[in-house]
Length: 259
Image (cartoon, rainbow, N blue to C red; front, side, top):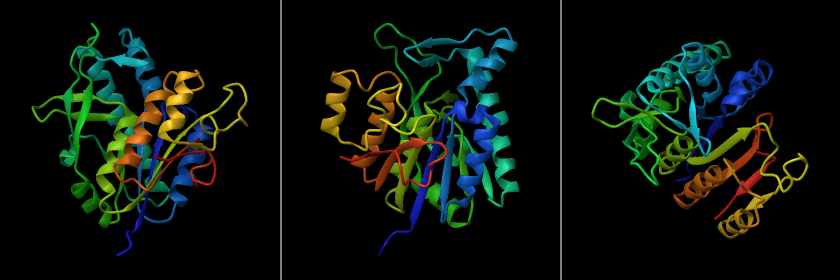
């Protein structure tokens, strides 16, 4: 039996912070036919709120160090301020949205990241299990999950978790139930051969392409884990993954990731 199509859109904090881009994205997201899921970031807002509270943000290789104080900030910002504003705005667009962290309905269970290479990331979670059955039960009721970048460890602790990873793990968990399209959207038109030329979109990236592009420096920084997550999703049965501009979440342009 043919599976129903489902679209998962992951939007980064930069888009969430830009009112014009966010309004357009939510309009476009609401227009996507069929069941859908929105996964959001919010790092810039968390940094701004932390600063107002006198809490310094520490980053290592683009990853946030989450100590006890910062955990309180990201829980408030991601799970509250950003998430609930998105839910309210989607309700106004006719989307019956429900905001979730990984702790809600136990949908994303993580383990606290161990100290590695002398770096202690603090209360940061690496996903161990995503519950596709629980999420699909919500989706089948006509509910659109809006997922914050927070998980839990099953022992009463919230953990800060990379939003790209949450999108990939959610896509993997839902792949047995749906024909899943995962769209990573951000400010650029896709993965670029030349970071200064927005028209230099690489149309297709496979495992072999990825290794070569990392080796020659074309793919670097935060794009490396994003593509790793995308390839992992494809390998686990997600039908298609596209990295594209926030104004192109129809999936018709951008960089397609294939095995």
